[in-house]
Structure formats: structure tokens, C-alpha cells
Image (cartoon, rainbow, N blue to C red; front, top):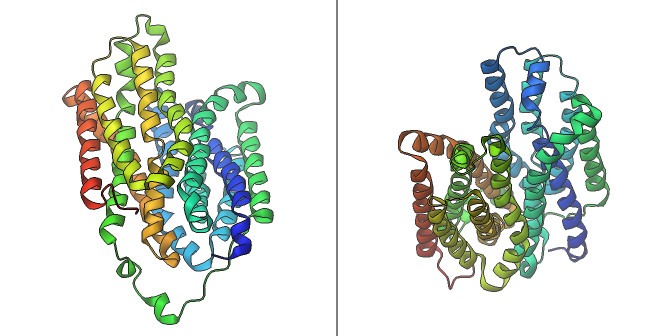
Length: 400
């Protein structure tokens, strides 16, 4: 690693932390007022508003999942900083344009464009993974993950209050301004080590064939997919499940929001600490223990008798899962050559996006056809299987 760039890794981390937070914050800001805005764009009828809200929300993540591997590959070829500059500028332009939409087609198209142009947090993960000293790698990725999760947590909260203060369209413009600040900071102050020169033969040689521990990397891709399925499978049934625990049905939505936020808050609290622990024990050890703990914590969630018990258990589950994504990224980073890191992590991100799509579908189907408790038990089994597979392929002793 270039020594000059190595000296800038802390500043890179701080800027990438702010950029990741601001971009995720801006994209989740829209959630509370999305149906209202869809209605303002000319969509009539409750069913149509709900349908178009789902399409507009999912468009961003669908597009992001489809291009994640492409951006990772281009980052390997042209550098990771250019990918961050591209993503922050692209989102800084598309967010205000969403506030200028005059019909639903324009809005959905801009959501798709934002997904294609975005990917700041994933690019930041790759940059930090490549340029951070090995002994601080997982901790740094954990700090970065905390910023992403904080954006996921605070974005909807701000989105619930800002429109009443400045208006819906102005909220889009304000979020674009926030991302533009991240673009300026990234362009001016992020320092990337020059890429090592490779021979033409190396450039054309298949990247996957150069990975000595390919089974470990494939296991990490599957673990990322499994983690997102586990996280999202509960989402469709949370509100319905909370309704069985809350005496006053007028408070169901509020309590459901607390339950959903509890896991995110737990992950924010634990991500950097689990990353620090992983730097000492090895990320594979933390992955196995975290999957096991989270799986076991799902069992009592099926038997709670009060909503506060569910909130506490979801918080504890968030604590357990908080360090998983940084650990997965660290294992991948340590098992692939430098010129293939972006491509490999792009595949990892695509797998995670696939889990975000599949999780709610699976949870909703199982909850509707078998019962809500079955969702908790089924997710528990998936996480324990994931822990067993990681133990078999990677194991505790191995510093992946």
C-alpha cells in the first residue's frame, strides 16, 4: 500500500462515513411521505397509490442491485475514488430532480436513475477495505457500517417532520444539497493510493481463478444473502404481530416503528465494537458467533407476551448482527487480489440486494400461509444453518 495514502486512511474514513450517511439518509428520507407525494403526482385511488409507492420505492434498490457488480468492476479498473465522485454527484443531481417531478413516470424513472447512479456506500466500503491497514480493517468497516445504519434509522425520522416544515419538494432539494456537500468533500479530500501496474496477461486473466480460497468467498456471498433474508423476512409481519401485543390499536403503528428501529439501533451501537473484536479474533469467528446468537434470539421473539419484550429482543438481535456486514467484507478483502476487490464486493452487494427482495416475499408468504411464529422459527433455522456452513468452510481458528 502506498505509504502516503496509508497516512490518509483516517481522513478517508471520516469523509466516507459522512458521504455514506448522507446518501443513505437522503434515500430513506422519502419513505414516510412517499404515498403522499405519489398522490400529488396525479395517482388516484388508494390501491393505485399503494401500488405505485411500492414500485417507486423498489425501483431504486432494483437498479442498484443490477449495477453493483458493474461499478465494482469499473472501480477495479479506473480507481475507487472516481466511483465515489460519480455516485455522490449523480445522487446530488437526481434528488433535487425528484422534487421537480410532474408525474409518476418521471418520479419512478428518477428513482431508477438514482439507483443506477448511486452506490456511494458500497464504493466507500471497497475504498476503505483496500486502503485501511490490515490490523484496523474490520473496525474501520464497522464504523462505516454504523454510518449507513444511522442513515437508515434517521432518514425516515427526518422524513416524517421536514415536509411539514419546508414542504415535500423542498425536502428533496435539501437532501440533494446535503449529498452535494459529500461530493465536494470526496472530490477534494479523499486520497487514493495509485493502482499497481499489472501486465496485460494479468488484466485478462480470470479474476475468480486467482482466488485460492474460492469456497470462503462464495460462502461470504451466501452469508450476505442469508443475512438480508433474515433481516427482511420479519418486516412484512411486524405490524400485524405488534397488533396482537398492543392493547390500544391506535398505537400499533408507533410501536411497530419502535420495534423496527430497535434492531437498527442495536446494530449502530455494536458495529464498530464487533469490528474491533473481529480484528483481534478474526472476522470468521465473529460471523459464526453472531449468526448463532441472532438465530437463538429469534426463538423467544415468537413467544413474547408484551411489545416491550419484542423491542428488547430486536435490540439484542441488532447488537448480534451489527458487525456481520463489515466482517463479510473483511473476509472477502483478505481472500481476493487487490485488482479484483471491487468486482468481488460488487457480487456481494448484488447478493445482499437479492436478499432484500427475497426476504419480505418469503416472510410474507410463510406468515400468511403457515403463521407468524413460523417466520421466526424458519429464520432461526436459516441463521443457524449459516453459522454451521461458516464453521465448516472457514472455521474458528482461521484468520480469513
